[in-house]
Image: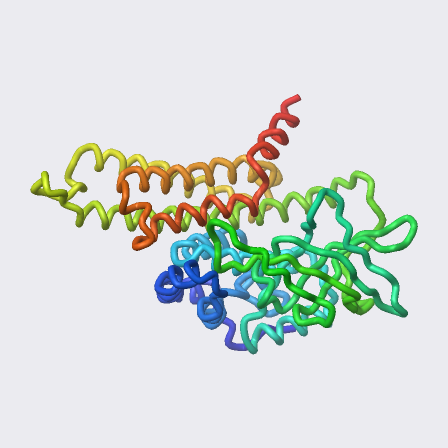
Length: 381
């Protein structure tokens, strides 16, 4: 099974990043202001071969690991955090397939064919309003019918496939992932996304009403399982990929903010000064503090990602704490930039306020700090 004879290698694809990032940055403000989907940006990511960078080598793909994936997403985050988030969701699905081979072979082959023709965005839909997952799969001949509602699905209007978490109507019920075409009859989108940031990511709610799913389009359907060390280790690696991938997006945003700040301070000469703000010791020290903080976060991100790629279990266990520290550093850096610039930093004429809004909203895609700290505390007792 191959993706395409012309699939770029990982280094070749990453070499195309600067042009893609520039294009994303040029359109990011427009999409944020109007809350419009960034089709052109997604197309650019696809054409550069970046949207399928984690397709496994056994499928003819480049087979990027987590280290290369976080490098890619950090750069995309510099251009447009919404596009980077959408790319991350797709890359994570391909990476999971490379590790576990969960998708049925024929269906994954179909997905790869679609990926040759154009951007084939993917996402998993585990979340639902309320605490209890209530999406239900009912037997319909040899296949299934899905009914339920999923919340906060990024890119919902443009997804090629959705992996929907659902339970069966059987007794006792089984749970699994039901693979659904994004344009399937019975899918309706509720345009509830009106968040502070990531406005182009289009995280709508998805209503599923009698959506047909073929019998061979279900992954991991099984009763509630007892503790299984092997399964738990696999789940931990999946969480590690997601936590570090999204943290990379946030670090990219922080780097974009820092770059804007340095340029702004170098050009800003108040009326009571004869030289730019960048020459003043206070500002030089503050910018250096931001740089030191981001260097530390990047070293943590890239070092831990490389260790996860090497299969170090302790590395995968530490990504929860790492994402908390990385995202704190990224957010603090942008907040400090806003403080240093004053009114201009909060003006819609400049991107800094958008960077801050994207970071604050991006936290909702990761475990809360309380949940992360509670998990760490539980390991100590």
